[in-house]
Length: 335
Length: 295
Image 1 (cartoon, chains in turn cyan, brown):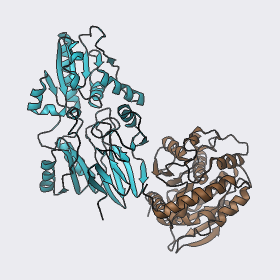
Image 2: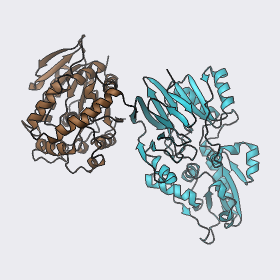
Image 3: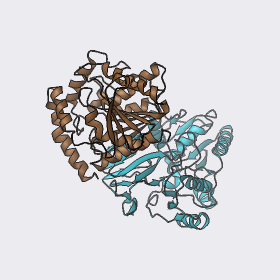
C-alpha cells in the first residue's frame, strides 16, 4: 500500500483525499497550516484552513476560494479523515492530522511548544507518522522562557526612553510582532507600528485577539514621541521610513539572534533571541508526545536532526524534502 | 472528489429520485408510504434478532445481537417529524447498535400527521424515562438523524428539566436544531443539498409546530440550555441544508464534536452495509458511543 502522504513536486500529497498540504505550486485543493508566505501561497483552486487563520490568509492572498474549519473538527475528504490542531506557532496556526483506515499522519507545519499568550497553545497529537519542521534542530538552540526575553526587551526600551532615544524593534509582521506587543510592558511608553504590522494587528483584533493599543506611524506624522517603541518588519529598519525617527536604538527579535554571525551581520544594537519555532528540547518533547515511530524532519537542519532521531532515539527517521522558506527572505525573520 | 462508486450512485439516486419525491409529493401519508417501500432493502445486520416492546407505553422495535448487551442505544428516526419509522432506519440503526455494542430500541413516536408538537418529544421522553427504570444512565446512549437528532436533544432538555440523569453520550446525524422558518442559515446551500429540498422543510415543519413558537427551547434545541449535555458527536455533509445547524449546535453545546463529510447527501448513513461511506460513518459513530459506555 502506498503511504498515506507522499512527497510530490508540488508538496505533500494525500491520494486518499486528493489534496495537498501547504503546497508550493498551484493545486486544485490546498490544506494550509498557517498564513506565513512560505506555507500559504497564491494560486490554489481551493483553500482549507482554521477559522482563526482565514482572515490573515484572505488579507495576504486576496480573493480566494477558502473554507474554515475549527480546531478538533473532523472533515471527511474522500477516504481521508482530516482535522486541524493548535501548533502554537502564530495565531490560527495548525498541525494537520490525516487518518486513513486507522493509520494516522500528522504534518506539524511550524510549531513551538511554549505558550506565547496569544497563539492557541500547541497540543501534541498522537500519530504513527509525524512530518515535523526542525528549523532549529540543533542542540545549540535552547530558548530562554518568554518572560525572561520580554524583561530584556522592557529593560532595553526603558533605558532608551529615559535617554530620549526611540526604540526600534524588527519583528516579522505576522506573529512575532503581535507576540511582542501582547507581552511587553505597554506602560513604558507608546507603541508605534509600521503599516505592515498594523495591518495584521487590525486583522487579528477584528478576530478578537487581545492586543494593547498601537499607533500606526506614517512618515508624515511629525515628530515621534522619544519614549516610543517602534515595531516594524526587519526590512523597514534601515529605510526612509525608519530614518524619520532620528536618533534610535535598533534591535531584532528572532531565533536567529542566537547565532552570533547572523546577529553581527544584522548590525543592530541588540538581538533578542525569541522564536516562534520549537527549540531543540521543544522538538524532542513534541516528537516524543506524538508517540510516532516514523518521523520525517523537513524545513531546517534536517540531515543532522534525522540522524540524531535514528541513532539516539531509535526512531525511523527520514528527511522529507520540501521547498519551505528557501525563496522567501522574510522567513528568516519569522523565526 | 474521491467518493466510492457506490456513493456516487447513491448520490445520484438521492438527488434525482429521492429529492424530487420529497419536494413534489403533496400528501405526507403517500410520501411516508413511498419512504417505507423504498427502505425495504435496508435490512438489519445479519445475526440480529428483532422483537417488539412498549417502554413507557410507546411501541418500540427492539434489535438485539447474539449476546445480550447490558448497554442500550435508543435511536430516534428522522423524516421531518412527518414520515419515517423504525422500519426505515432499521438497517443503519442495527449496525450502529452493533458497532456501539448495544441493544437497540427504535421507538415509533407519533408523527405530525397524527399529532403535532409536543406529541413526538413526549413519546421520546417517555421511552427514555422507561429506559432509566431498567438501565443505569451510564449504560444508555441516544442517537438520531435529522428530526430524530432534534428529538434526542429535546429529550436531554426534558431530562435536565426533570432532574433526571443524562445518558452517557449522544450521536447526532445532521440534526435539525432551529425550527424557525426564517432561519437564515438554511440559505447558505439552497441547492447544494443532495437530498433535502428546502420546500419540503417549509411544508413539514409547520405541520409539526401546530402553531407553537419555534423559538421555544422545548422545540428548537439551539435555544435550549445544553450545558449539562453529555459528550456528543455530530456528523453532517458539507453542502447540506442542515450543515449550519450542526455548526451552530457544536458552538452552543459544550463537549460536542463536529465531523463534516464531503460530497455526501443528508443522512447518507441510511445505506450502511451497502455503501462504504455510509458504513464507515456508522462505524465511527458506533465507536464514539462505545467509547463512552462501560464494557
